[in-house]
Image (cartoon, rainbow, N blue to C red; front, top):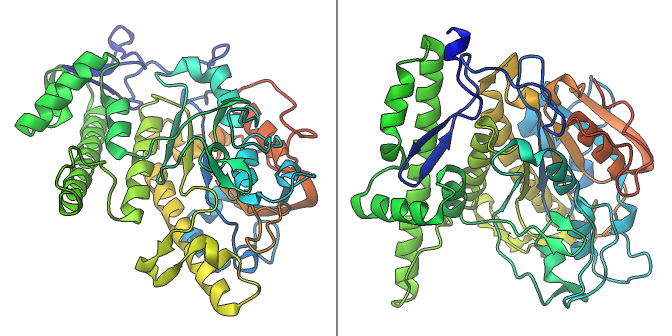
Length: 456
């Protein structure tokens, strides 16, 4: 395609109440590294960052590889990542000192979430005077979020109150959020797949978006029906490869929409069985696995379409006591985490931990399956995954179970287990990730500099 016919990177398919951003096409003018717009690879692909939180720590002996360097074996919990071993770094020894009591007494679960991305000591309060710190995702969003439609997205699977007491005198705001716009304002996560879908693919004009959704529900139409004229017009100007990419992308959008609709229908049927006066289903799937994967798929599409480059994902709230009947664990997760060395409880904790990692593997597979520029979407992304507590029985905050997946556009050398000195701040990792996003900073939280050995 000639330069005069090049597509702008911000091209949208538009229709009544719909605004569907497009993935990176060969015929698009490449993104340039602009001031305050984030890092961009030589091929024009932007660098993205995501943070995924799991509660209650892990069974460390089934998480931590015995060997360091590239020639390490994945232990039981991490085995589902075997296909992605060259795409990840397992990091041992990192510590969140501000997750410790430091004179504040009990409340480790709330602190583990409050400190997870802030590196700041949460104020022990259950009232209006909550205080943590700006989280690393929001620090990045303030620097580069202007480059995309949404500065960041915050998603999860468990709802939760934003006030009241949840953990030993700590506000529920700490337990139920990991993203903080400023020290007193958590970025409330969205757990309803329908609302995430409408935000990503709906119009910014609420009146149009509401009308479009009402029409789609009334006439059983897809959001794609409202942009097909734009799609057909665009298709005539695309090359063979880009036509295939467009078809695959729109198919993926429609498949997610079908899954959202199926969850709503199941939710509606469930609610009608429980309460006759129920008005609207909440849209959350009955299956926890499907809920995680549906939200993860939308995060992937948001990165693919470059509507945001920053995301947080709470797979469960801090201190979650969800049972896992579907993997034959009937006890609650938090209850089991106080294992006191009991072998049966530890085995069940490992099964829960492995289940969570299986969902991470699903998301990595989606990212790696999408070609972009000179690599894949995973090559241009970095995802920190882990927990703010190390061992759920000890409630300790040193040697946290953390890994980083993705190459961040070549900024991270992957495929290793790296063991750091205990007490190395997690915030050193945040400094490195911020630098990989093109943000000039050498300090965050209690950092002592960037995380050595991580860079490519």
